[in-house]
Every structure is written in structure tokens, then in C-alpha cells.
Image (cartoon, rainbow over all chains, first blue to last red; front, side, top):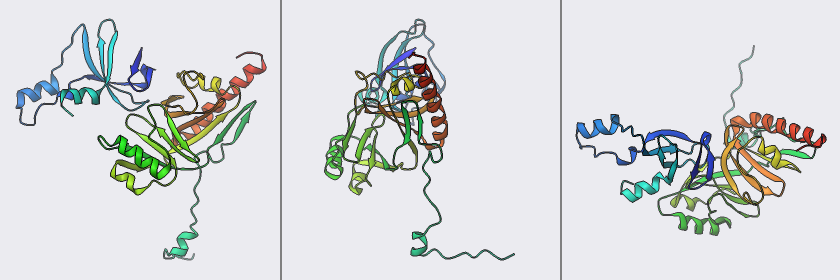
Length: 92
Length: 201
């Protein structure tokens, strides 16, 4: 499996560390209440399909990436800098 | 048994300090195998620059004014005499050579990394074939040109590769891994040289 880092180009999977579903970019407000925080911390979707994930290019440029990956085919549709995604969503 | 005499530290005492800087690869390099040479780069001051939000252009101008090098693009480096600025990852630049202008701290996070890295140079015909045994990167001339920089793994260690010439590469890993890098590279140098002697690649 190879991921195309927006900065470094196509690199082997062994250069990356997987973090999980890209929920860290939409952190609830501190006073959003226990329900929202419970969901943010513990509840995850487990789709057989497309999912946005956070990957860390640890052995490369040290950027956090949002990888849009199909969980059954492993097809990767899009790789973006997490910083750009957060900026676009207004969370950074 | 006599008590040790502890002398107060004075300016003249620090001038004649008993401590000596030891290069990361002291006692291990230089090394020549066949047509290949592995050497340690002369020690240079290394400073990591991480521009503050939106200050990239201002930092580039300040770098050019103070040190004669502009901020390099992704995977690139800029050089002026013994001063180099290496792209060193997402939003990171490594300035090597001079002591950084203090004014840079207004535009970037400035961190001294002079003792953090072992800096090696591999040179000679077949240097690319040596590295092909140690890193999955495509290092052909067309894709990794003179001055190009890649953050990648070298023999499973996080490091940096720099194209310094047609058959010359700079290799950087953390200083604590210097001996491992020398071991891995010298193994690969032996392997490439042995195969060349047999008429293979």
C-alpha cells in the first residue's frame, strides 16, 4: 500500500502511522456537554465504504494527513494536509 | 588519598576546557570500499526554523537578507557558499552553516539542532545503487535532482537524503543512530562493490 503525500509524493505505508477516523479536527466546544464529548471520545462509525482517516507521515515530512480511503477495497481517493482541511472547516 | 581539587570556573578556565567536541562518527569514518567513499561532513551549526503562521514570505526575505539564501520549496534546498537552507519537512527548514540572525526569531520558531544529527556523505560510482538497498525512494537523476531533499527512512531510520552531485548524496540521521547508519551503509557498499566485481549490478 502506498499513500501519496501532498508534499513528498507517493511513499510506502511503512513511512506512515495510522491514527483513526478523522474526528480530531471537529473537537466539540469545552461546554458542549457530556453527550457531545462522549460521542467525540468514544463513538466511531465503522462503514464498509469511504471514510476520512488521520495518518501521520512520521518517517517523512511529519505532516498530519486526512486520507479518504475505502475500507473494503483500500482504494485511496484523496490525501490532504490536515492543516488545510482544518483551515477550510474553520477549526484551525 | 588526596582530596580532588575543584577549581572555580573562570573565563580562562572555560577557554581551556577539558571537554572536546566529538563528531558523531568519530572512529568510524572515513571509509572507502571499491569506488565508493563514505565520509563525515564537517561539523556545521544547524538551526531548525518553523515559520509562524503566515510568515513564510517574510521569513524568506529575512533569510535572504541575513544569510543569502531564500526559503526553499518543498523537497528543495537553497545554497550560498557554505550556507544552506534545506526543506526539512512540513513547514520546517534547516539552516546549516552560520549562527542564525537573532531577528529570525520574530518570524519563526528557532531551535538549535547542531548536535542532533549525524551528517554523512556518500560519493562514488554506484552510490545510487547503495542507497537503493537502504531506502525505497526513487533516486534517479530525473526524479531526485541536484539540491533535492527528501525526508524518508534510511535503513528503517527516520532521516534526510540530499542530492549533492551526480554520484554524491548527503545522509542525515539522528546522532544516536550514527554507528548503525555507518554499519548499514558500509554493508551496502560492500555488497555493491562485490557484485560489480562479478560483473553484476
